[in-house]
Image (cartoon, rainbow over all chains, first blue to last red; front, side, top):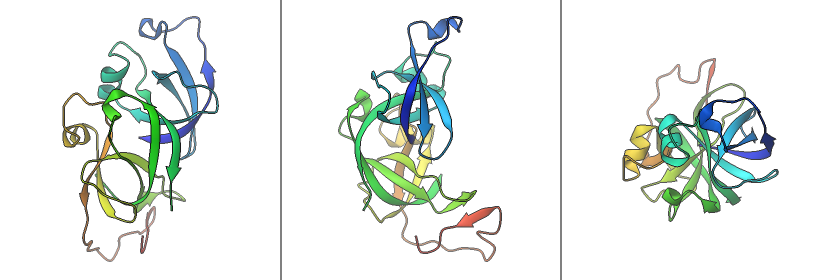
Amino acid sequence: MQLGTVIGPVWGSRHAAGLDGRTLLRVELDAGGEIVAVDGLRAGPGDRVLVAHGSRVRDLTVGAEVADKDVIVALVDGQDTP
Amino acid sequence: MILGRVIGEVWATRKHAAYEGRKLLLVTPRLFHGPRPVPIVAVDVIDAGVGDQVIVCVGTPARLASGGQNLPIEAAVCAIVDRVELADDVGRRPLTWLEGA
């Protein structure tokens, strides 16, 4: 699971059926790079988020029909790194 | 599995129900590719803390270690490491071994 910051939403008029009504968010990862994750928590631009990856995570959170294996599972309030 | 060091804790109020009551730890791998290690976040299942050297399991083992087949958890801290013994060539390129971490 990785930490990142939401950049903003992605829209597509033509998409896989499983993505109907889903919010896809561009997330810049702390580790570097950018991914598009499914939002289940109503995250917005600038929010710090925890992104989990994998089909099982996807199945158990947003549903098996969703064509994206990166899911936002938590909105991060802060981190304590002494 | 990833051998790493706990470098911090992550706080989240709004989260998936499966994460309720769970501690999230930030772990830096000790052996890594590339210019710098990439910290990952893992659910704590053994009461590890900052500074501990730990093993993070990823995928299905992480879900099982967290208590169930049906948990959307990708990574879990599932062991505290007491000692590591290394071969002489560990950390040779392209891998880097984080000394004294």
